[in-house]
Image (cartoon, rainbow, N blue to C red; front, top):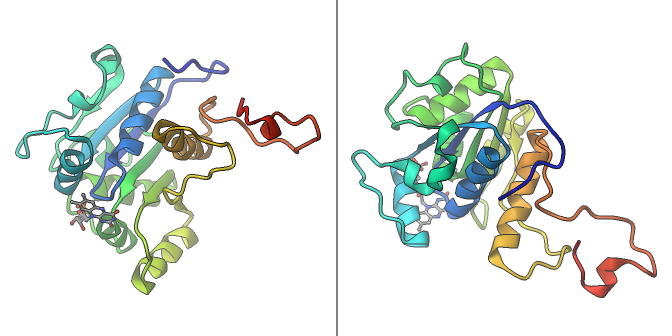
Length: 218
Ligand SMILES: Cc1cc2nc3c(=O)[nH]c(=O)nc-3n(C[C@H](O)[C@H](O)[C@H](O)COP(=O)(O)O)c2cc1C
């Protein structure tokens, strides 16, 4: 269980999984936000379901996936799961009280459609609404290498104020596990959402007595 480093007002976040590699970033973000007492509106594209199956062995029914299965039962109270075509769901409305929308992982396809104002499903509509309402929108793309098309779309979005936060974990905290690499990226997302957390040790100026030199990432 993740404990809140300090009390924060509970807020609502739309977390959208699309078909980029790294669905565990999205799953972990949802888990941490719920553990910290926030509300999460969750949806996923069809390709995200395929990635969940390939990467994590999680099989959800394509026609009506029960996304709640991605989250421990004990955290379901503040979880709202939406179908991809549920354009009446809260994240699709500019008047709903959604603090921020996060697409994680964000495929190059979804990123391109968001950059060009498509709203053909709830994920794209939630992102579109965040942009038009001036709310925080965090996209977590994952692809390599990046083509000129990808880079142009990202630049376009960044110039609009969208936070383009690639799934690029650092190694300076000396991770020992995949979970720590995932938490590095999720911690970066939480920082941009102004959600206090202690998922990753904060970098401090190295000294002769630095704990970093002893390999203790605390
Ligand atoms: C296992 C797997 C991994 C994938 N990884 C990526 C990726 O890292 N980045 C990406 O842009 N697309 C990736 N794709 C391809 C997208 O899922 C595909 O382009 C899909 O049409 C995106 O649809 P969406 O944007 O509606 O989620 C992957 C697909 C699979 C099956």
